[in-house]
Image 1 (cartoon, rainbow, N blue to C red):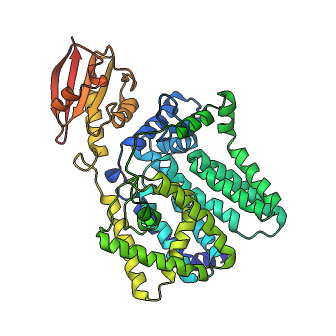
Image 2 (tube, rainbow, N blue to C red; image 1 turned 30 degrees about the horizontal axis):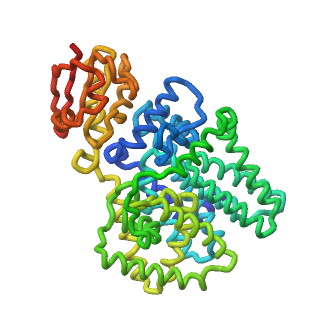
Image 3 (cartoon, rainbow, N blue to C red; image 1 turned 120 degrees about the vertical axis):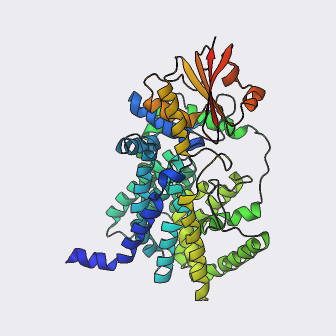
Length: 490
């Protein structure tokens, strides 16, 4: 009877969870962009499964590329993905299963969080719909990348920080657990550390010493793997991070910083793409700046409508937004906002709720949902960005059946990457005779080249192609968008 009452009370949230699940899984493989970081990290996860080795470090930071001093995140995301790969019998989509699971269950907890943030039923419903079905949420729930899991875990973090506790003792334990979750978020991406430090300082300023200590204690507990790695390797990560932060990289166009300040909201509402390209409602520049003016007006108005004890939450939201603005170049990088993603969604929901014209709300949400609906059917192809996973598997499976003479390797000329990482996943998984690794191209017996234009390969003459000399082209296989060229050394 009690269960029936709870279901009846939360039927809208249960329905929303189901709808969100459909958005997260429909045509998952057909729309998966299996290249760049996704392919790299899925391949590394497969290596963990096959080699059964424990590693404390995971994917490299994007800016840690000076000399050989790469900086690495923690490895937790790889082990979480490994569980999914095993569940999916090593299909590439298996790595995404845990991400979908955490995103889906976090919807219920977000709804509990939003009830602590506001008593407005309108804001609660609007915010929960946005959190579950925003184009940003749908996009980052549908592929494997280490920062993505910060979104659902940030919901758990903020719920533990902001919820009511029946006693001070329970609150201290709650903050220790929040620190543990925070440490997990740091393991996914170091930008989360800025948020934890800020929360620590805020609680110190408010003279909540015990809670500050509890938060840091939890952070240290879940950061033990990275701490042990640092102690074992003479603080390599710290030194490499400092080195890379103090080096000057190639100058890049810094982007429109005014636009970037509002980009987080625009991305969530489906009016602008982020670092991960996805379908959006195309706005002309006039309408874009008109939208920004409206948002600015609502933001100014919100200072008098947000409760006093909730205004402090605008501090971490503003800080992380400034980090995203500073770190973003021409393309806006919303993943720097993931640690405060629930707060941003709450704030957007509050801004929309301030609009007294009901028709406006019924326009904004459908536009957002329309953008989200397009995402599962946004197929990849060579003209857009890269080959589809179906085409990648078709080419890779052909190489497996071709049973090449070892040692062999493969390279590509599609987007600029020459080591053919996406194809390596299928070969590593299925080939009885494994290809050489991505750094071993000298002295090959067989080399495969995937390209739309072999003349481009000859012209660029990259090391992956010229490392083995005296190659003779012996076979060409047409796969439509690209061709597979087989070379053998003579």
